[in-house]
Image 1: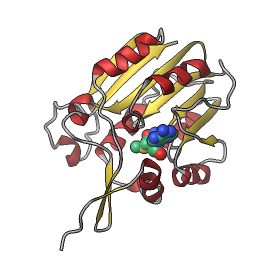
Image 2: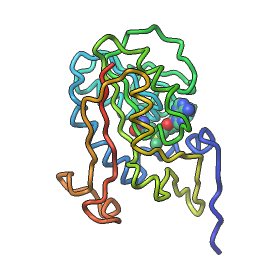
Image 3: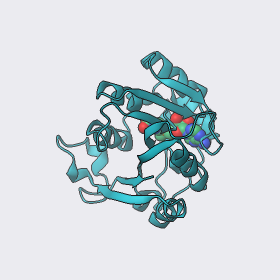
Amino acid sequence: MSVDPIHLSVTGAYDRWSRFYDTYDNPMVAAATRVVAQGLGGVQDASVFEFGCGTGRNLSAFLESGAARAAGCDLSAGMLQQARQRDARLELLQHDMAEPLPLDSGTFDLALFCLSLEHISALDAPLREARRLLRPGGRIAILEIHPFLSLSGVAAHFQDGEQEVHMPAYPHQFEAYLNACAGLGLQVISCREWRPCDFQPPLTGKSFKRGPLFPLLLELHFRA
Ligand SMILES: C[S@@+](CC[C@H](N)C(=O)[O-])C[C@H]1O[C@@H](n2cnc3c(N)ncnc32)[C@H](O)[C@@H]1O
């Protein structure tokens, strides 16, 4: 007998997923891991803040790549617990990225959003906070599920045994990212649309479900 999917809050879903998030076979996470490993334009000696840092896998990778400081916030206590266990050097806050952070302005070189903005209905508040945290000349990097995918109904979800778990997700069009950043006076530095065929060695078969040319991820960089 099949079990009906359930819908949990973002915190409820990620608290449940946190136990096996890092080992789950997820094409978006696999692709994002490869992109982050390429350094997102360089993190040597940089102070990095990640909005929706989850289990801390990106932040920890930045420290391994030479970042001086790695901090982040997340709503889910379960995800943050995994992050603390992963790397004691991470500075972690349980905090909603749509709310102002208790951190000084102008103290980070790079602000990252990686697979987290799909859970946010309005992009302005977290992007404004990211801009506030940045030093002059600092950068915002956005690495999110590609609009073609999210607008066709693909959203974060996972299988926990027999149970399929869904959570709130908001597809964003290109105009949402670009207009939110333009409204904050952020300047586009670069845009890349990552397709399965762009990765070497190749990603696993799941990533090719829509063919080698159908983009998985949108990567945008803005200068503050
Ligand atoms: C798909 S996970 C990505 C985690 C991490 N960025 C990564 O690349 O592995 C999305 C994360 O965003 C977090 N999140 C969602 N909405 C949030 C919000 N309003 N404030 C802070 N974190 C949020 C979730 O708890 C979850 O850990």
